Length: 158
Image (cartoon, rainbow, N blue to C red; front, side, top):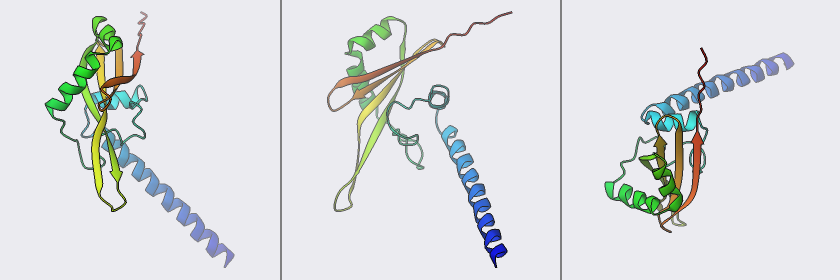
């Protein structure tokens, strides 16, 4: 009887390991499929997702595909960012605004109603191939709350 319990326990652990491996692979494939190369590079090379919390909760949908962002929302966020002196300095240093990514907060009320709202956004700025900056914009307050600047230096030797 004891041997039978050990075999069942070992089988259960083995099956759980295989299923978790499959889940990890499916998640990794989902991260790169349907998202731009830029977001995959942002997460994989720099390990930063804009302070938005766990990967997958960045406002790009949770298993439901990408979310369409209106041009008015993007223009509003860009306008807020461009009014910040530190962002102005980045733009003067050769950075360009390349993308606006909303961070969507979801609230479940006491009665079960679900409300989703993009109260924050990440403005991505690139400087050629050497620099990238992420400006977190609080849309409701109308201000930039954080800027993360990442640079890359490559020294090629013959």
